[in-house]
Length: 335
Image 1 (cartoon, helix red, strand yellow):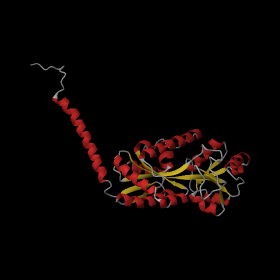
Image 2 (cartoon, helix red, strand yellow):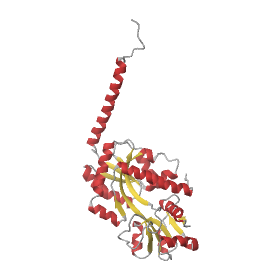
Image 3 (tube, one colour):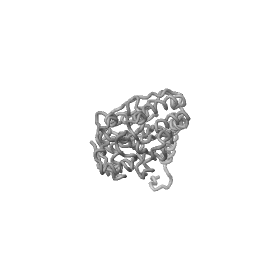
Image 4 (tube, helix red, strand yellow):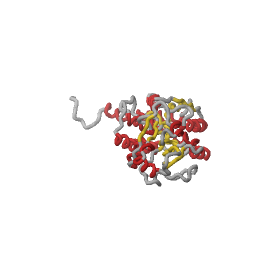
């Protein structure tokens, strides 16, 4: 009998294909679930883009000890500073997506660097999966005590009439301090002039009065503020900080659109099993709610967060949007 090529009935091979694809998909899901149930079964490395003893390093070391207790495995903190966070980020993006190599992300390494440098060997948005936001830290406008301005509004006016007080120090072109000063100018119409310290930092010159001010997280400057060598004109955040009840927020000063934050969060190579990411995220959420961790971070002008991967992803998208607009308006591009 001749073969009827127009038969409406599927062949045995055609009937087998959909069934086999479903079976393969189920096997992949079961394998992923088995891996996640077994996770972690060996030490976890967290790669840190800043030096030992820096703010992010201190924060994650406190977290790492407790994360180890909750997950039942050692958590090894490995510092890979340099190149604005690119060294550490590249290590993680090239690591196997198995949940055993994670990145401590910062604004510079995960958001600002990729916006400034078009030729990086990775795409931070697509090559990294959010795990959890860990903490956010307030930023402040800090000046030498000899600068004759009592608050942010007075300082804005001074940058027009007293240009000798308009210089602000940064840690280099494209640094968070640099971009924050550009953002401040864009929002307030101030005329601050960034002065870049590429191989040192401006703290000493600011304390000595050779540099007028700086936009910076308060922790590295807090000792000099308490000693009366520096003063804080305004601070980011939704409310005043208990350590500085007399210092208004930028929003209170009339600049609600100026709200830069320092933050740290954990990320994994894209492709890491979702169940493994959730396990780490849930543990970080528990740690973030512990009373002594909350208190320690408040002392460092930080908010203890601990978020879902989805919430951290939305936070990163908002950060990319806001810093991207600052960079675009300032027309900054680095090679």
